[in-house]
Length: 473
Image (cartoon, rainbow, N blue to C red; front, side, top):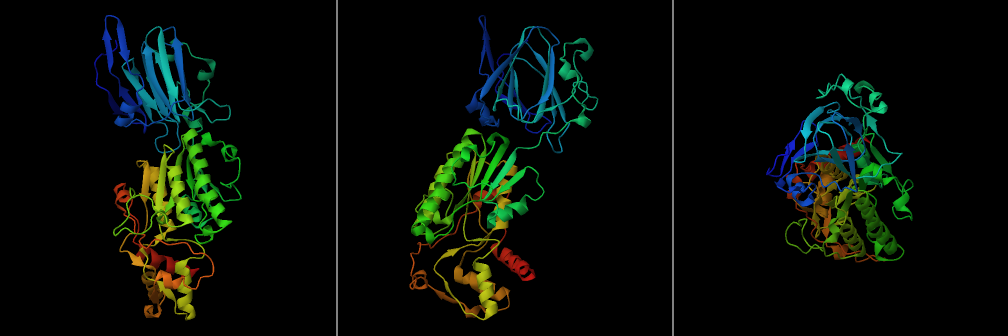
C-alpha cells in the first residue's frame, strides 16, 4: 500500500553512493500524484546532479517476475509507477565495498539512486508493476558491463519468493558467481599536457592508478581540429588540463599571441563543451596573471579579472570558458616550480658559479611547487569537493623574487647578500623584445582550498626539500 504524505528525505545505505529517497505522494478519491524526479529539491538533499538522458519503463504482469543482477557503466534513478518490488543491489565496482549488498522494498513513495557499477535487480511483489528508471548515458555495445548470479551464495540475497518458483531469464540464471565477476573499473581520468612540469607531477601523484591516462602534446594536441572525436569521451569521468601556452613575453607578439589564444582559451572552450556534453569533470589550471596585482591584500577566488598582458587575458578567457562546464574545478596558482628550467634552479646555479644576480624586489607572492598542485587536484577529485575555483599556492609569508633568491643562496651555502634587489622597470629596462607586464601582487588567499581538508605545504619547506633533491640529482 503506497504511503501518502511523507516528507521528501534522503536515506544513506551501506553501499557508497546508493541512496534511497522517500517521496511525497499526494492522493485523494481520484488517485495520486508525485514528483518522481525533481532536480532542484533532490540535489539540495545531496542527490548527485546526474543528468539523465533516457527514461525506461519495464512493465511486469505477474508477481514474482525477477530480473538482474546487472551493473552498467552509468547511473540510474529507479522508482515504481504502479505496484511494488523487492529490490537488491550489489556493489560490483572495484574497491573496498565490492560485494556489499543492500535490499529494500520500493513502492510509488520510494525511489533509489544507483551509482555506476552497482548491480541492480528486483522481484515484483504485486501484479501489474511498472518499474521505471532514468539513466544518464545511452546503451552502447562497446561499454563494459558486469553481471552477478541471482543465487550467488556470497551475496546471499533473501528473495521473498524463492528463485525456483519465479520467472527468470536463461541469461540471468547463467551469470557468474561473485568470485568470477569482473569488477567495474572507475571512469578514466585523462591528464592533458602530461609531459610538462605539472603533467610530470600529476604522473607521480597518480602513479600506479590504472584508470588514469596521460597524454602529452604528441598524444593529444588540444589545439588540433577534431578534439570532439579524439576519444570515446563517455568513458571519462575527469579531464585534467595541464596543457597551456606559458611563454608570457612571447605571447605579446605574433605568432605567440595567436598560439596563446589557441591553447589557453579556444582549446579550453572545446574541452568545456566536451565536459558538458558527457558529464565530465573538467580541471583547468589558472594563473595569478588574470589579476593586475593592484589589490593591497591577498586575492580571493571571487575577485574580478583585470589581466595586464596577452597571456593573462588568454588565461582569464580560459577560466570563463571552463566555468561553463557544470562540473569544473579551476585551480588558480602562481610562481610555479617543477621539473626543468626554473627560477629556483637558475638562482642555485648562479650561486654555485659565483654570479651575483640582480633580482626583482617589487613583485610579491608565494612559490608553488607542482607536487602541491597535483596533490590539490587529486584531493578535489577524490573528495568530490564543491565545484568551482580554488586558489592553490605554497603556504606561508609572501616574499619578493629577490627574497626567494636570497633564500636559495642561503640554502645552497652561498651569501644571500650577493643578491641585489631591483625594480621591475629597472630589470627590464634593457630588454630588446616586448615584455609582458607582471602583476605586482600575486598573493592568493588559501582559505577556500583549506576548508576542503587540503593544506598546502609551506613554500619555504618545499624549497629546501626541492633543493636537496636537486643536489642529489
